Length: 69
Image (cartoon, rainbow, N blue to C red; front, side, top):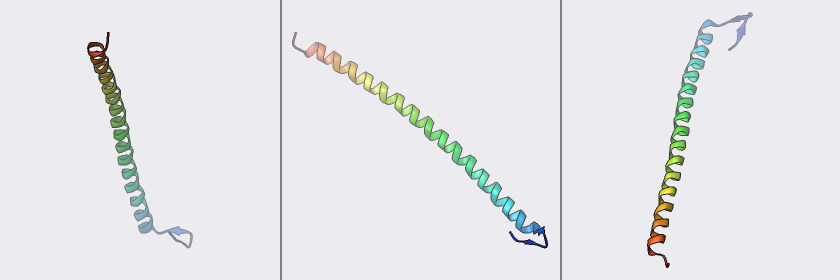
């Protein structure tokens, strides 16, 4: 954006303003998507620990019933 005679070209300023507004909207969208990804990762971590717990309990039961006494 050139300053001609100390004045700002209103058309160029308007174009720049619109670009900033568009980038702001994109950033907001990216932030929401990152929050969703983090939420999904947290849920999958909980499901992983639940699966490990169930697998461990099942293995303990099988070991108890079929193990050598």
